[in-house]
Length: 64
Image 1 (spheres, rainbow, N blue to C red):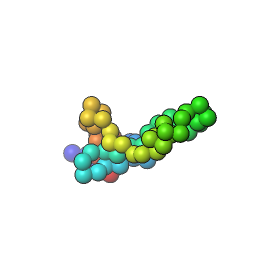
Image 2 (cartoon, one colour; image 1 turned 90 degrees about the vertical axis):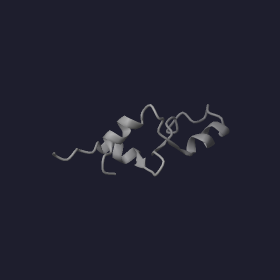
Image 3 (cartoon, helix red, strand yellow; image 1 turned 30 degrees about the vertical axis):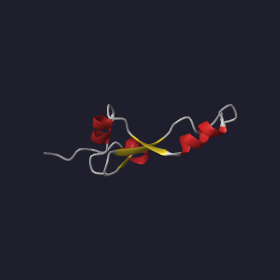
Image 4 (tube, one colour; image 1 turned 60 degrees about the vertical axis):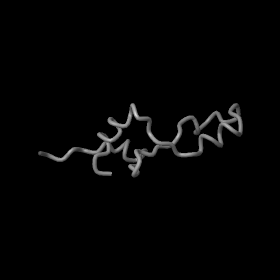
């Protein structure tokens, strides 16, 4: 079997952990003035990829 290529864009954004795949929140780059402080603070935290997207995320980062 040949090796599977890693999706380089996904490798820069996702990290495999013991319990799943860690990712960071979107909506945090610009147009921050209209967002509340609480909303921006919650967007800072990393999250686990949703279970419905986990299979495709693991396929994109097979060796990471």
